[in-house]
Image (cartoon, rainbow, N blue to C red; front, side, top):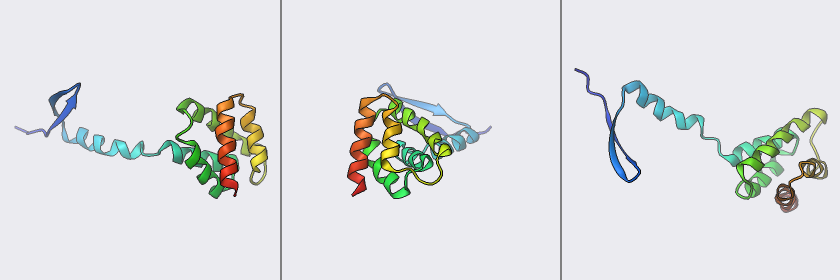
Length: 120
């Protein structure tokens, strides 16, 4: 007879015992490692991919990640393909022009404030 590990978890205010097989436990432990990229780190990578300088992208991502919704962050992610049409890095003015073209005033406001704050 094999004894499976028992893990207690709290679901809707009740303690529940869950039986896990060893393989399931291993998968549960490894799953968070796959989903460990924060919105800030994904935004930073997207800004660099779009052509902004890495230092500027890191600073801007720090400022923007908490102020934009996930839907707005996804819309910004669509601009990562901009780099393919430009050689080298984008200037802040070129980047803001592309962001403004998205037609979302809040995205433009948050992005432009971050760009100005991080440029100095």
